[in-house]
Amino acid sequence: MQRIDRKSAAAILLPLSWSPVVESATASAPVNIALAKYWGKRDEELHLPVTDSFSVALDHHTTTTVRQAIASDDITLNSIPLPTDSPFYIRCVKFLDLARPSPSFFFSIATTNTVPTAAGLASSASGFAALTLALNTFFGWNLNRQKLSCLARLGSGSACRSVYTGFVRWQKGSSPDGSDSYAIPYDDWWPELNLAILMLSPQEKPISSRQAMRLTVETSPVYALWPEQVVKDTIAIMTGIRERNFPAFGQAVERNALMMHATMFTSTPPVCYWLEKTISSMNMVWQARKQGVELYFTMDAGPNIKLLYLQQDAQSVLSYFPQARAVTLLP
Ligand code: DP6
Image 1 (cartoon, rainbow, N blue to C red):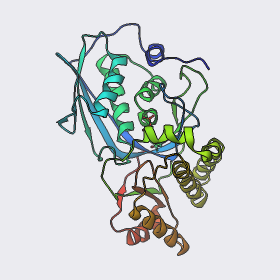
Image 2 (cartoon, protein in one colour; image 1 turned 60 degrees about the vertical axis):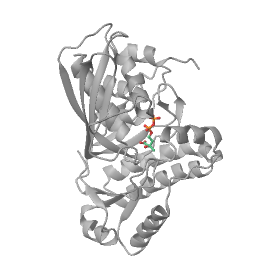
Image 3 (spheres, protein in one colour; image 1 turned 90 degrees about the vertical axis):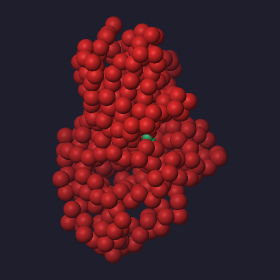
Image 4 (cartoon, rainbow, N blue to C red; image 1 turned 180 degrees about the horizontal axis):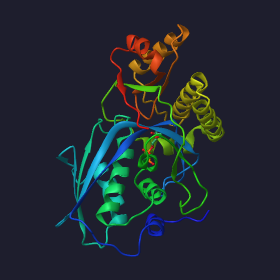
């Protein structure tokens, strides 16, 4: 297949030339939690996925301010300057290169997160989405949401879903330049749906989701089953939302997360983000379900668990998991 580099992919989205139209620009974007996961790329450079994915937005945000800097890019995360050799600094600068009007133009980026970075709560998604939205204002690009979603994707795949709130579907697209691989909002909402986070470890991940994803695609024999499974799960999730069928929705969400982890366990070398507490919490969810509580979970590339339940079961869920932190979902 024809390969397109990031600069060319960005050039399709951006005007021919640009310069700042304001002194500073600030934007926020929500954390999103995938209910049907993005796991595996057909293009590593442009973050083009093998499958569609589907997410819901949380009332946790990244807020980012963009300014011009004098001599080099400076990036702060929760008021702490990022070392220039840290992986996240390098990723941000690579992304900023796409927006840099000339090689002698530097950025000052101040980012704050309301969730611990790299703890499996997808703060890189909200981070690159907020940065994209702030750059759009800073340079007066006036890009529409579709283009903003494509641009955010070049920072981190899942960031393309964080340019919207509510339920969001990232359609994988088929074009080699990625111009049809962007998120679209799903036109339904489920006010009774609840999510709570079981923070089992705020530690940095042993291996990044990016590396784990690549390793899985390259080595797991189970990965061959993944694309078809995601199609089935995404349909079941969307139908579950439409029909307010919580068991059907929950089963598809939980199966999808477990299947993603199954592809990791079967890669070489194996990847396991789970802690003992992760397994005991999953058992507790299954136990609660046997006892009649409609409770399901999802997990990302990390040990933490996100519980999903309906408002009517909130009390029972919190009695099983008193340490769970309920998070507001953002319509
Ligand atoms: C498990 O979007 O962080 O959270 O595109 O390499 O930056 P890159 O990956 P990233 O992967 C997210 C993986 C996931 C599932 C999901 O959010 O869909």
